[in-house]
Image: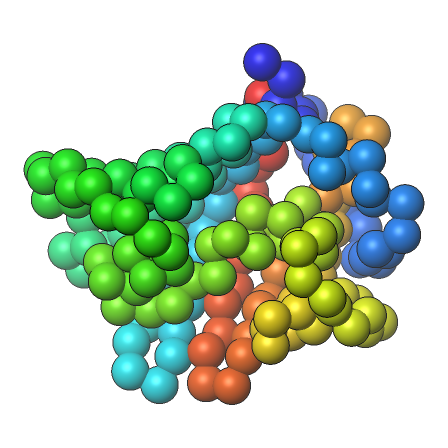
Length: 177
């Protein structure tokens, strides 16, 4: 099982520059994972949570847990099947992971594209417009505010994503193996 980096105690070097070019090799990564902090808000709701995300070949497992009684939500995404563990219950859904997560958290998180964006990549199924520190895709402006060197990979540390009245900030504390 080869995730992108190990959980060593060695400090991670930070760098502020984002480059979209020469990142295509990251599309071939079948397995990766990270832990960090997520803040998402729109005109009606705000979500602040810790996040653990594991991408395993064609499956994503996203665990959100946070303050104010949110508890813990685990979302397993496998194609069009979305399995949610929430409040001691396991509920199966079919359809968009974005719709399912919005139902449980109250905010829109562009999960399908985000699995590429967290690696500093564009979603290969959709067009995009390049910007200085990121790109615009699917109506979302993706800005890489800080990058980090993890082993030989330059991966995001701090990402800001916004669209109209929705904003998402993600800080990746640790890329894991």
